[in-house]
Length: 447
Ligand SMILES: Nc1nc2c(ncn2[C@@H]2O[C@H](COP(=O)(O)OP(=O)(O)OP(=O)(O)O)[C@@H](O)[C@H]2O)c(=O)[nH]1
Ligand SMILES: [Mg+2]
Image 1 (cartoon, rainbow, N blue to C red):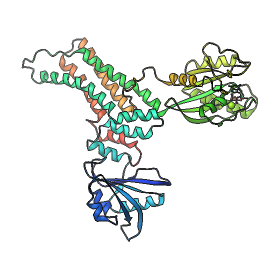
Image 2 (cartoon, protein in one colour):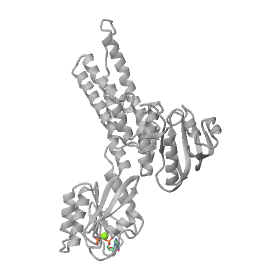
Image 3 (cartoon, rainbow, N blue to C red):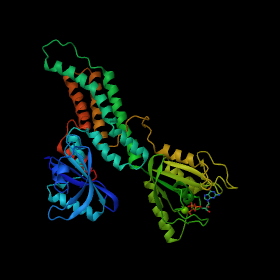
């Protein structure tokens, strides 16, 4: 990729107090300076400075905007190149005019992820950190954000490097023997414990992908149950607002309602649904049909039973059909006539909010994969990384079987090499243009 001058809006299109237009490339400072009313000062400014300036249209002398310029000099910038960040007023029309002026002055529109791609190519960050940049921007909850931030800090890179170090050491010894078979270098002993320890570490890291996805992408949770059980009341309790209509009339909710909430750090899409009952009414029937679709596709169902009326056969059927991935709730614990919660039911009151904390904890526990992460250890959120980790672990599995079967060192070294190569691909030591396009193509513009 040739490194020309690129520019892009790094903030969303729309009316805002400020917007940031990012530029980068050799000569970026001079090219932006040519549009400034105090061109000489901009041209001679040191990196790491902010300058106030008026931007003037390159053809004619129209003032485009009054802006602040953040000046960066290579290699001390995000991309490692000369770069200027333009802090302008957040008017879409004004931004359009500034971008137009930049395009007329030698800049072209940056591709999605191009700034970060340049940072990677300049050796500013490895591929796991580059992917973390995108993951941070996408994070929806504080926990998801924290996990991505740890990856940006290099937690995944460090874990990969640690696993790779041992393997490279073994490989180096093997390579000497393979290269100089006539020399008496002694019998190479590949310690199987080292190989299996590395394999387990890689498998554990790959397994964190489900946790990473859960906290990044989230889960779908549906409230279901018979009419009048208190689904809408619970829905509102979770949202802490009167969003869904609650009434003592059976069949109040006819269409499902959804909302995004943060449950213990997991971004959850929560659904309130139509109460299940036999009905001849066609609109309610359609609502119930839609409810079944939502319930079937949900990651978890919170099945609500009215504790004052108790369980009936339909409840038992639905609960049995669902099997797992269901939390059974015994609602209206505050009411006079509420029977004690049967075995396996969580007693709550949507009215007084008793038991709601426990319910949230149960939902989080049900959604969280078994092999979960230890606090402070890295969690991955990239399918690319997961696949490569699994490839490396599988290759190490082959090494272990080869060792057990007493295969010759040269046969074993092929798998060892494969594992090292897969790890190198994760951090981006070895990459092809295709891989880079795939990684950076999913980024936002201006990143
Ligand atoms: N005492 C008491 N009443 C509740 C509780 N939760 C809900 N109710 C009442 O039960 C009735 C039904 O509540 P909804 O939340 O509308 O029930 P629903 O399951 O959404 O009902 P449909 O939309 O008809 O399927 C209302 O009169 C609520 O005030 C609770 O925890 N305690
Ligand atoms: Mg309802």
